[in-house]
Amino acid sequence: MKRVITYGTFDLLHYGHINLLRRAKALGDYLVVALSTDEFNWNEKRKKCYFSYEQRKALLEAIRYVDLVIPEENWEQKRTDVKEYHIDTFVMGDDWEGKFDFLKEQGVEVVYLPRTPEISTTQIKSDLHK
Ligand code: C2G
Image 1 (cartoon, rainbow, N blue to C red):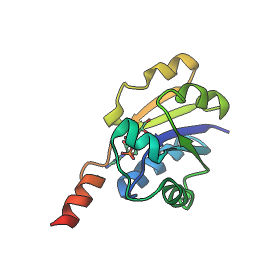
Image 2 (cartoon, rainbow, N blue to C red):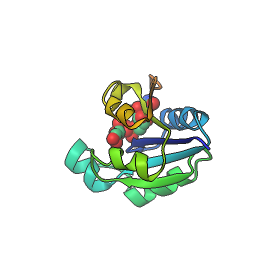
Image 3 (cartoon, helix red, strand yellow):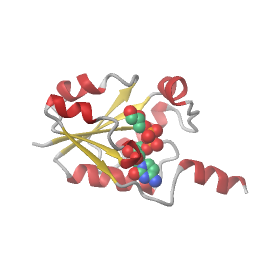
């Protein structure tokens, strides 16, 4: 049973997120998604979510590739999450390339996957605004 984890905000869920989750799940048998809380998003990423944590969690739990959703409350928890959830592989989009390589020291495989180029929440919001 190979266990994979990924982290994110996943607000205004779109096919770029789904592409990431599908490829992350394909790397193992069980996918944990650590979902940024509303507080973490605002305090650490200056992101104001359109959907609340509970709404974003329900959306993720409806995705066939996702086996468990846990809260992401701080930057540091990755170190303990990989132990607590017996993670083999950590996955992020390549906009984070290199940022989490320290997890390799804990025996975790670190994989950065190419982002889906043409879609982003910012793009969606600006298109809708036109
Ligand atoms: N993503 C992607 N393609 C896109 C948009 C997003 O592959 N067009 C990926 C990102 O690279 C990330 C995941 O989808 O791996 C979630 O994206 P965000 O919700 O924007 O996550 P982010 O705000 O980068 O949070 O501790 C890590 C942070 O919580 C990551």
